[in-house]
Length: 325
Image 1 (spheres, one colour):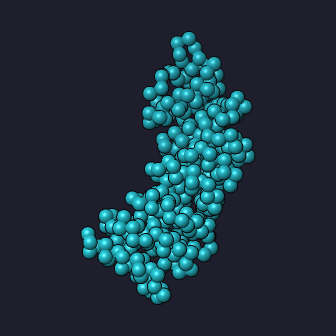
Image 2 (tube, rainbow, N blue to C red):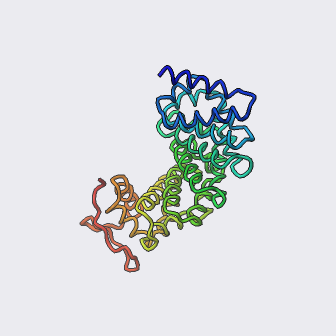
């Protein structure tokens, strides 16, 4: 291991070289080492590489930027605390993704978005810190807004990062303020790829858990879009349907009777079949949320035997009301 320590220290010393070629070669080797030899990641962090890597994200050299961002992504897998405690790392990542449509290298944007997600994936305390970086939140939303020109992998990493940010409730209002709701629904309506739609609806479900989301959803007819996803005729995946159920449930919880009325009208026909499908065939969490949503929407439409009844115009029929699993 001592040999590797010496090798890392030599490479890190080259990051301050006046020769761009020397710097790029050192970055390439650190990127490869941090990917293929996980045991070197703490050594790289301890050797003072992180400030150099962060500074390189501002470089106009795309090869330098790409390799620095990829190395930071590799380090973020196991060296979260050193990255979060190094001044300027989050600002440097924000710089890269903020220029996703202009000066930043495409690969660096993807790696930076993925690094943000990686940092937030398992440490709750980092979510308010990253969420307070408004430039990061705005830039991630803008990647979704420009999804037609953004590579699919970058869009997916931006969605994952936004999902992690939204797990902290106080971040959701900022996300709504920066236009995440219309950006997400535009993605769902215009993209259509299963993985993208699943990830987008997962973010929507989290964002729906704040008061500010109610009006934002109303402006984009979000409830109607979710009802369409729940219609079995659309062929949405179970994960998408579970996310739609979770979103509607969060909206009703936040918006009260007025929103419940809007949701009740929107799901009156085909969407009820989708909610029933989640209740019968979804995951344990999905079943529980579908049962709760039905109870909130249709609590008075019950017979004495526990069945739920609908008028003859409904395509839903009847559903045996099971306890949540």
